[in-house]
Amino acid sequence: MKHVLIAFLLLTSSAVLAPAARADEGLKWMTGCWRTKDKTYKEVWSKPESGFLFGYSMTYDETGALTFFEQSRIDGGAPAVFNAYPSGFGPSEFTEESRGKTTVTFSNSAHDYPQRIVYARKGSRMSATISLMNGARSVTWEFRKC
Image (cartoon, rainbow, N blue to C red; front, side, top):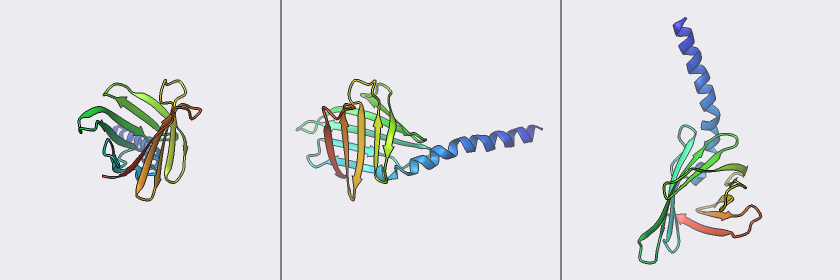
């Protein structure tokens, strides 16, 4: 009986993890080190693993000194959830709103700013745009591979 229970638990736990692990594979296009042309902003994303992507970003001033950092985690699933930890505090959760082959949009209308986060990849470049839900106060970063 003990072995049957263990087998059941293993089967059900892997069934629960499987959808998240598959879901994050659709975001593997985000993987890698990305930097703006002026080198004032860098964002790094891990390869999808066990249903998660882990990331961090750093902002630098014109002298190259670090002025801001953020840790991030995307929990795979349907929908995926983007968790932001600005300056190590958080998380602020943003739920997947839509996804294309090389785009993903996360949103949280209850958050002060940003309320929407959009990632898009075109060839060897990627962009990240933050804004309010209505598109106001939009800021976009254009990245190239580091």
